[in-house]
Length: 222
Image 1 (cartoon, rainbow, N blue to C red):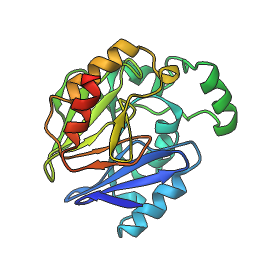
Image 2 (spheres, helix red, strand yellow):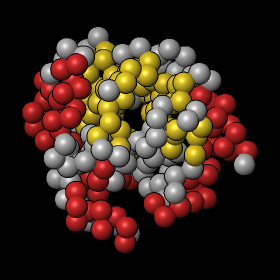
Image 3 (cartoon, rainbow, N blue to C red):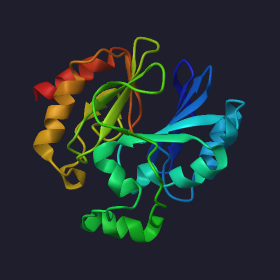
């Protein structure tokens, strides 16, 4: 586990990251990793002297299994509210089937399917919502209802989800094979490049710290 900003922790769960944000009112969890891997999040909570019961809100960036896999279990154990974009909510809650491509179907055989979970707050517009200090930014492309979250702390912390990927101080586009709409994804990177943030964290790839928005501007300009 790595503290990437004050009270913001990057938690590696095999090949994907979840993020813990410690607030005065408990813990906000951004994404939950793969199905059956909640023990890794619980371990990370203990390292911050918190428990599953301290999780007040779970923010889901999109419906993919490696981001929603443990949401239902963690909700049962914590009573946390779950927030996601309204467009992806129907897949997350099981109303619509998972729309998997060939690679995702192969991966699902190994990881297992996520348990459906109800979305308590479906987001329909950008801006502030029920969690103080956080702003939602609709960033479609990877999925139609992908949403990134901007935290007003330490110059700004962007939770990118899979709108982009990080590593070695750079920002990369998410692979085309895993992106539903490449043009929309490119436009979403350009939108994020207009925001203000010093740190960016990702579902895949290590965090970028120090004027991270500049790396998004470079990607948008390519």
